[in-house]
Amino acid sequence: MVAHAARHGCDFVTAARPEVVYALPNKLGGVFSYVGNLLAHRRPDEFTYAAVRTQNANERDRTIDEPLGADREVRFDYRLPNENVHAVLRRLARAIPYGPGVVVANDWIELALTSIHDTGRAVFAINHGDFDF
Image (tube, rainbow, N blue to C red; front, top):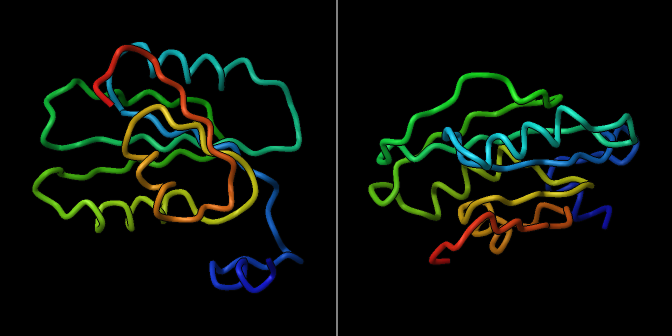
């Protein structure tokens, strides 16, 4: 485990607290409200919280600029299918670095990430509706 963490740039002496990463599309709608409420009404605990907001530039959905109330927020833009999906996932892996904690997946792209990149985190997938995946 120590060697694995070292490969990912982690140092157990200075390791950060476990982190809960909510990954979600940066679109106006229910998922954004759902995650926003979870973050707004959380109680203090041993975790830090992050929101990784994904945006496919090829989709014309309305984006949201308001903060979600996470300790760390990342905007991740990509352009599929124009970009290579593996290149996109490698970039997304930098937004969800290796470490202890949880990834809460709300869309397919972060599930794809966790299937090919080891984040060191537990993965929870939330299905918000009747989607084709």
